[in-house]
Amino acid sequence: MFIIFFIIACEESERFKLQYDDKIPPNSPQYLYYKPTYGGARIYFKQPEDPDVLTIDVTYTIKNGEQRRFSTSYLSNSIDISGFDSDKPCIVELFAVDRAGNESEKISVTINPLQPNVKQVAESIYCIPGFFSFFVNWDNGLRQTVHVFIDYVYQTKEGQKNEVHLVYTSREAEEIKLIRDPGFTGDTEVSVTVRIDDEYGNSSGNIQLGKINLKEDWLIPKDSWQIPDTNDSTIVDRWGNRINTGVPMGFFNGLEGRDYMAIDDIISDGTFPNFVHTYSRGRTGEPRDGNMPWNYIIDLGDYYELSRIVTHQRYRHSGATEYSGREDYYRDENVGTYRMWRWDDETQRWDSIRTHRITFPLGLPDRQYRILGRQGDMAYMYPDDPKFTKPTRWFRYEALTGFNNDYQSLGANCLSEITLYGRKVEGYNNEQNHDKNESKP
Image: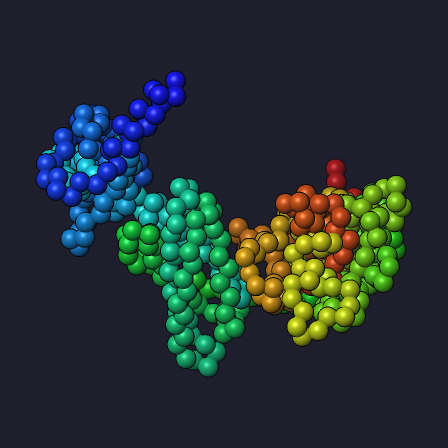
């Protein structure tokens, strides 16, 4: 057995000996068939019976005269090619290369690729107006690397034309980019143009997404906000009835944490404690009831239609300096996913707005985590179609999981601040019809 193995190994190693004086081209592979792929093809062939062959190659020439080349091992029976800019018929050349670099006679093959990824992304991209911002959304089902160029133009309130150019690189299946600009106002008209390029240099060309008018909302003042006591599940509706909702206010006075600190307009910077802390019993304050999910319920003091929320994480307990880095941001005891609710007086129940997962930014320097955490995480009530909720006086923030263990941790104890945006509903609390049952048959 050893002798046989040694002989085979020696024979195989002969294939890789360089013979620079070899001028004889190898035999050509036999083309069998191809299967189209998105922006390319997989070509099947039969290997040539030639001991000198090392690779099977394919070349084709693009519009600007550049030649692209793909190579696969002599042991393979197929080769993948890609990078075509259309689904029109293309001619490629299939050939073998030996260990001296000699190329066999080339076999011309005509292929019809499927629609390339650049065109798929280009057909899916669109923009929608947001509050003092706008969204650019696209699909990238093949998850291939694309470069998205976003150019937008608007007129500042001083009457000056402002042009901005952005570039994003992505291979996510779905992308939503929120574009914010300090020069945006609530009535700004923005003209948006995009272009999609891939790693092969193929381009969609400029795509006019048109003009959009941004929306306007307002910061909801906190001076009238109130919160229930721990484990209190009652609220007062617009008719003055006290309703037991069945959902209790959580416990937030663990250790140095205090319940009011999430709505005091002071953001945790790590120099002194300013955050709520559930002490691992956030649901009701009783250890037997566990920690998550826990609810933070806010009486807004009047009726508002909500548009956005900004939450701030706990940075660290105390002792932070200007040299401190990431600390607790995006991990440990901070909330990673939460659900938003509004109380509906008409249905007498909590109405779910949506669930939000705070994006965990990967691969950043510690200092950058601190900057992002300090800015807070903003979420729209309805990001797919930015708009206001129905009027409500009661808002419920339900913390579901932490960041750890891929957003599965139930150990999120802390939150520094909740800030809400929207618009006040004038006169909603003083309508003449106070009998909620009057409209019922």
